[in-house]
Structures are given as structure tokens and as C-alpha cells.
Length: 239
Length: 351
Ligand SMILES: Nc1ncnc2c1ncn2[C@@H]1O[C@H](COP(=O)(O)OP(=O)(O)O)[C@@H](O)[C@H]1O
Ligand SMILES: [Mg+2]
Image 1 (spheres, rainbow over the protein chains, first blue to last red):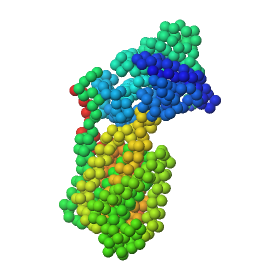
Image 2: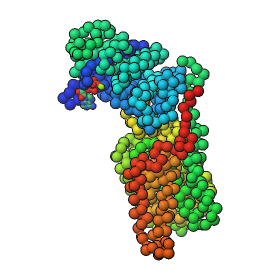
Image 3: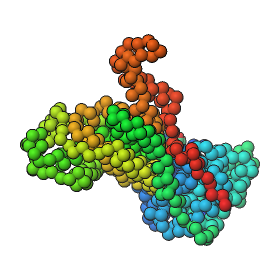
Image 4: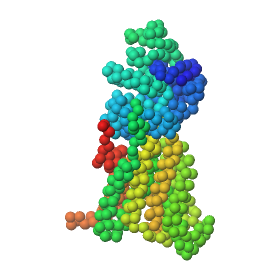
């Protein structure tokens, strides 16, 4: 179980995160929404060890990983995707996944014992492109490759930063199905960021809403849908 | 989700070895053609080319996998050459050339095989020491560190005269190497470089040079892999120095200094630093090109007209070719591809 407690982070004068707390259990899909600049990506960066918080703790099964660098977070079982794609552009699709798998086999062998690379590339509709350089993929394929690469770490926590960005309705519906499938088959805790309420509500059981660096609402989908603060932020978009 | 081939590793060894043979093929064909002509001066030129292949492939192991430029690889070429020279020159000869050598080296003479083994060990130790410093630094700072290393090493060669003879040539090295033997060595180095490049470690290291943050988020041990590449690169480069010394018999620190640094870096960049085939192509093109231009420099007779001698043309042309190459193909002629990627593209296993 992932427990984020009282995270604070300032960039110069900007408070990107103010006393942010969040929990995510194994097998849970947690939605994280909020307008641009709310601090969602910063929170993912803190959890994955990319950013060192000014205060607060990130505990995975009781072990604190905050501020210890991305390697420590990865070894503990936290895997992520990036809002601005960070694939290994000149490596093939299979090699991109292999990078994560090589680490996992050395550091968390039990977590990837059942991982079938070939079957997963089929499931992610990437098999036909498996030997092509990642940079040659379409945008949607690149987004799915980011997710599969993260999955190859055998994560207990999977952080997806706007996985549906740039996708049309059909594509994002298929993606939601894929993410649900990951939860069912791998049982990891999943945090999904999106600024689109529809996508998140279809996908997750519980939702955390952020604005201006702080958590302003947290709860099951129905409660969030009726929350006045959320309606105010999302004025104009009808959930 | 259970299946019989779950968590199966992607096979890479077979491909790396067969691909390595293909990577070596152009060099092999050119050299066989030259041996067939029986012209000794051409064989000597080809030998220098094969040495360059070993050195440039050695450089590729570093630059192509870790990223960044290295200006210190010829230090290891020189160390390899001097180490086997100092260890294998007969004792009577040593009384003449390095009578005051330290560590009792003046009274020691090893067989070439033993000299090579000891030399590799020395190179490995020096590579670990220098590598531990350099792999901790990223980007331009690391490039500049390698430049400093080159300058320091050259000073040592020039001023530790009791061991390296300073600006004087070091001669008397056993000359037993032949072009076919050097080709066999070069092929082994090429295949070794391919195995490293295609191995899970090589793939992780290349990933880290493409996107360091993403690699770190997947727990890639960047410092350890960079150190590994640095050591392998140093060993390969030193082998280039050894086969050079055992052929030519006489070495000189000046010949491993900046002109050779730039020539070999240029060969790699022109061919494409991201593939071993790029290293081989770069050496072939620039070596053959320099020879053709050298003929022009001497004022040849063309269509009955005697052309004037054009000294300095080869330097100019080399510079022009490199600039042109980098403008037209910044990733080098081969880009990220090996010969076998073009001839036999990998196919997805779509059952
Ligand atoms: N590396 C950084 N340096 C300075 N400011 C940053 C940095 N990263 C994020 N910010 C600022 O922190 C705030 C939150 O950004 P971010 O976490 O990216 O929001 P979101 O992902 O919700 O859109 C924004 O005001 C942004 O400009
Ligand atoms: Mg964001």
C-alpha cells in the first residue's frame, strides 16, 4: 500500500505542492484530477523519486522512499510514465521494455517471474512494431509503450501521467479497458492522472482532486461528481 | 497469463556474433583483395587500417553506448603499445634503449603472449582508476575530463624518459604480427563490441544515454554500466596498440597524440558512432580517401596534364569530408543501424 503524507514542495516562490496526502491500495485505480498547474505531475515526480520534497513522506508498505532518488523508488516497485514522453527513441519497442525487464529480473525477480513479453506486446497492440525504433511509432502507440515499459518493472505501484493525452474518444476508451485489465491481472495500485473528468470517472473507483498545489476533494466517484468545489473548478464541463 | 515461455530472455548472442561477422565483412574483403595483389606497401597501409578498426571500434564501445565524446582512447592505445614493448623487448636490447628502467624492468623480458596478458591487466587497472572518476561526470564536463587525461598521459610518456624514452622512438619490439593475424584480432574485437552493444547491459546503457532520467526511473545502474563500457573500450583500444607495436617494431608517443585522436574520432563520427558497423565504415572511407588524396598531393599526371603538387590537401579534404558528413548526416553514415539490420531486418514474432 502507498501512503503519501504531508508533501510540500516549492519552486522559487511557487508552491507546487502544499501538504498533499494520498493513499492507494493494491488493486485500486485512483484517479488524480485537477486543472493545469494544479501540481499533479509534481506529485508523481515526488512519489517516483524524481523530485525531492521539502517536507512529507512517501511510504510503500511502510518503507519511506521520498527524496532518495528514482532508483530507490524503482527498486521499491514504483514505476511511472511521463506526461512528456520519455521513451528510448532509438531503441526498438522490445528493447525499451527490455530495459525495465533487465532491472526487474535483477532487483525484483519474483515480481516479473510471470511476465510474458511476447503476450504483453500482443495485448498492448505493439507486437507488429516490436522491432521498430520507438521514435517511429504513432503517438498513441508511444503512450501505450510507456505503460508497458513501466509494467515490465513488475510494479506494486503504477503511476500514469496523462496516459490518454492526445487520444480520441475511441482510443481513450480502449486505453481505459487496457488499464482496467492491468489492475485485474497484475493487482498493482494504479494512480491515473488526467484533466478530463469523463475519462477518470469511467476508470477509477476513488478520485483525488487537486487545485493550486493542494488536495481539495477526495472520495468515491459519485461524491466527487456532486462536490461543489469540483463543479466550480470544472464549470462549463458537465460530468 | 501463464505460458511455457514466460519471462523468456530475448536471445541476442547468435545475432550479435553473426551480425559481428557481417560487420567485419567489408574490412575483410578489402584486405583480402590487397593481400591478393601482393604489393607490400599496400599490405602495410591495410595493416594500419586494421589497427584503426580495432581502435575506432574500441572508441565506439565507449562513445556509442555511454554517449559523449572521448579524447583519451588513444592513451590506452599508447599504454597497450608501450606495455607490450617494455615487457617483451629482449634484455640485451633493453640495456641499449632503457638501461635505467624502474621496477627492474631492464632485466625482464617476457614472451609476447605473457606480455599481452600482463599488459591487459595493467590497462584494466588503469581503466578502473580513470573510469571511477570519469563515469561520475556527465555531458561536456566528462568530455573535457578525457581531454585532460590525454594531456596528462602524454606528459608522462614524454617526461618519464627512463621508461618511455620521451620523444625518442622505442624500438626493438618483436615483429611477428601479420595482416591475417591482425584481421583475426579485429574480427574478435568487432564481435566483442557487438555482443556488448546487443546485451541487456548494452541496451540499458544506450537507454541511459538516450534519456537519463527515464533510465534512472527504471533503476538502470548508470555509473556501473558506464564504468564497464569504459573498461571494455580501454581494453579494445590497448589491443589496437599491441598489434601495432608487434608489427611495426618501433613506437613513439607522438604518433598516439592529437592528430591520431582526431583522426579516429572523425572516422567514428563520419561512420556513425551508434553502431559498430559505423566504426568500420568510417575507418574504410577515411583510410581509402586519405590514400587517394595523398596521390593527388604528389602532383600526378591526369589526362596527360601534370597536376601541381598540393601539400596539405589531405588535411583539408579530411576536414571538408567530416564537416560535409556531419551536416548531411549528423548521425553518421550508418546512423543507429548495423549492416545486418539493413540486410536482414529483425522481424516481429507474430506467430
Ligand atoms: N521543475 C519545475 N520548476 C519550476 N516550477 C515548476 C516545475 N515543475 C512544476 N512547476 C510548477 O509547479 C506547478 C505545478 O505544476 P505541475 O505539477 O506540472 O502541474 P500539473 O501536472 O497538475 O499540470 C506549476 O505552477 C508549474 O509551473
Ligand atoms: Mg502535468
